[in-house]
Amino acid sequence: MNGRWKSEKLKSLLPYFLLALAIIVTYRAVSELEFFTGVIRRIWGIITPFFYGFLLAYVANIPCNSIQKLLMKSGNGFIRRRNRALSVVIVLILFALVFALALNFIIPAVVNSVELFWLSIPLIQANIMAAIEHINSLDLPGVNINMDTVMATLGEMFQGFSLESLFENLTATMNALMGVGGALFTGLLAFISSIYILVEKDKFKAFAHRVLRAFASHDVYSAVVEYMDKLNQNCRQYIRTQTIDGLILGTLATILLFILGSPFFLVLGVMLGIVNYVPYFGSIVGTLVAVLVVAFTQGITAGVIATITLFVVQQIDANIIQPKLMSGSFSLSPLLVIISITVGGAWAGILGMLVAIPIVAVLKDMFEKIIEYYERKRFGDTQRPDKEDKSTNKENEEAL
Picture 1: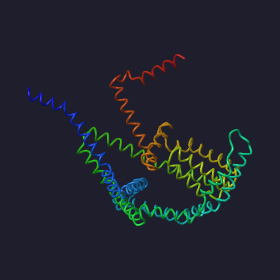
Picture 2 (picture 1 turned 180 degrees about the vertical axis):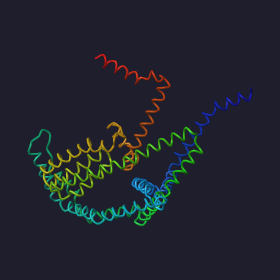
Picture 3 (picture 1 turned 135 degrees about the horizontal axis):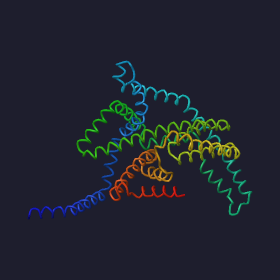
Picture 4 (picture 1 turned 30 degrees about the vertical axis):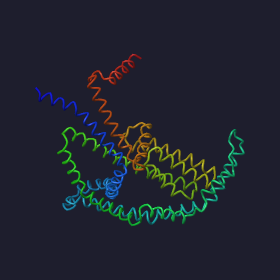
């Protein structure tokens, strides 16, 4: 009896002990915050190449899996046995061809467009001043833009700008931040590690399953595997969908801007295709930049035409192309998408904005299952509020 009382006493004191331990750990972490952040920075500096290698391998694994499935159907025994390694080699060759194509055709055209843009700065300034004069001439109530202030601001913005100085400043900044040698080493190590990750993907996956199965219960193991598979499927589909959609949108925008006679049609089309990876905000910001460039280099009329045509293209993309590609997989409300992108961008920058939608889709599914579990626990299968609402609505519809 005495031993049982001591055991119960110890159990009742356990929460207080854990609370005291948490307070002590928190106090030490706050007091030694600089030390801990330094350790985290050093650890991150070590694993950064492998992190980028994992991201590169994850993206490359999407076409690699498709090629691997085709190779497994081959009648050649050697190809079937070496299907994974051969698929990795084929993907690397395809990436090398795309890189060579970009290096020889796309990048020079983009550089020429950027150089032409900097040479067009005087024309842009003149068009801005003409637009301001037109606005002032309308005598709108409370609207009077000071020309001297605008000229001074534009002078500060564009003073000393040239393509050479831009690249010199960018190079100096990059050298100061990370060093050319360190950047090349990180990129090379990330590339090499991505190849090994691609080749050994199945072994890594099997090992992760073994570790999780060994240290977690069956229910925890099943739940983790289920939701990780869903997250993986969401990320794969999101990358595939946004890539195809970006290619379509960028191609259509490039053709339209070329028809409008914009000398920057290629760089603006490529930009619109890239920023399309970020839902809502990406296409809006990209379209706004494209319209401003057209308006300030070709005139207000061309800017209005570009606005209308790009708006029509975006509506076709948002209402026809994207729903067909997504197939309803990410059934998130626009408000939830905007909140997800904002939080993801604030937490992890561009990468956070890109992965926010697939992660939130999985979290939403988990939250709905938790709600359903507690609804069944509280109301039972026949008395859940949503079922009552549905049955009531059906009765009302029949009565009407």
